[in-house]
Image (cartoon, rainbow, N blue to C red; front, side):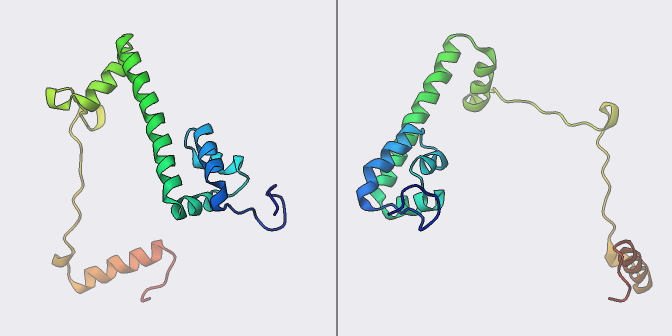
Length: 147
């Protein structure tokens, strides 16, 4: 079987490769594209293998959880060290019920009100007026009226 991934039949994964797949996922922090490259298979092959092997899919989910735990521990570490952008981000994310929300104020030009334009009520136009609009739209789009 061709395991190089260069020409010939693309390499396949079999049940015997389960441990190798889990090792590759762990080595690449659960990033499936990188793990597939390390296994010398396409990512579609890897996803199909995971779908067909629930125990390996569960191991992949465990790898994702481990990485999430590491990331969360770094957030806690940054908060404890007084990293104010991280503190602010965390409060906006988790402290909403305590009033920590990002306020966004939208304004128009020079801080004035936002100007809106109402769409016209076409039901009040006559057939002739609607035809004029349709001809103008067709002309603008390079088409001939009637279409």
